Length: 258
Image 1 (cartoon, one colour):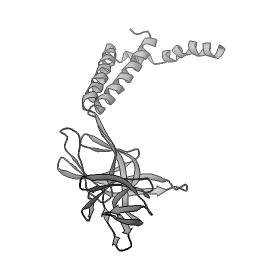
Image 2 (cartoon, helix red, strand yellow; image 1 turned 180 degrees about the horizontal axis):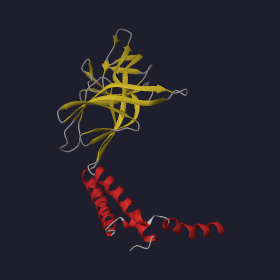
Image 3 (tube, helix red, strand yellow; image 1 turned 120 degrees about the vertical axis):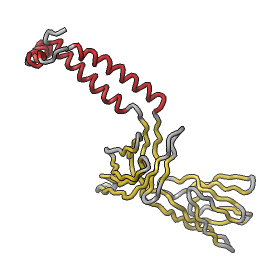
Image 4 (spheres, one colour; image 1 turned 90 degrees about the vertical axis):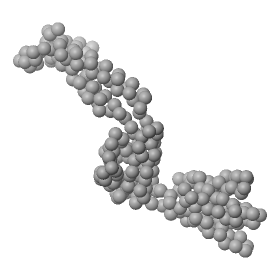
């Protein structure tokens, strides 16, 4: 309790040590009161703008060496992005570290380049690409399906189905280690979702096939959040002025100013 009382008594005294010449050099100290209130209003305006126009696209993959056209909501123009080079180190525990990527993109119809890393988002026009992690990107999966009389090797890609004897096979998703794949099988009006893995039996037109091998074709990719925050600069500047003016007025108060 004794230490607490001493601290409470001496804190105001700290502000009395501010040289009087500092406060005397400011001709109109009420300007900081005005800035304090107007910056607070601007912060509120910024949050209102965000409420109407802010959007975020989470966990968007950008593979290395494949041009990507990222479609954005509403009337926003698509982003043209190309991951030119992906760099990272592997720690002793086997985890990636020091992740960075060289990105080529179009901004106002001009080709530009930039670098993105975990703590360094990439700004394209009014959009921010925030790097979250790296992940293998699945280009295609080769399945070997074998029966007593026939061997079928369909290759599925995330955007192109494969047709066998009039039956359409469409890739949907895979698990984390890419050992199991969810596949939509459409035979006329009949549709069925199956989990494909090695040893799985698949019936095609009455013939049973066994999946003997699955070969995924992957490349490196970065996974980013795409953020549109139109009032970011406004809120940042207004918040800085708000804190600065509040501190200055606090100093004046302890120096006997009104």
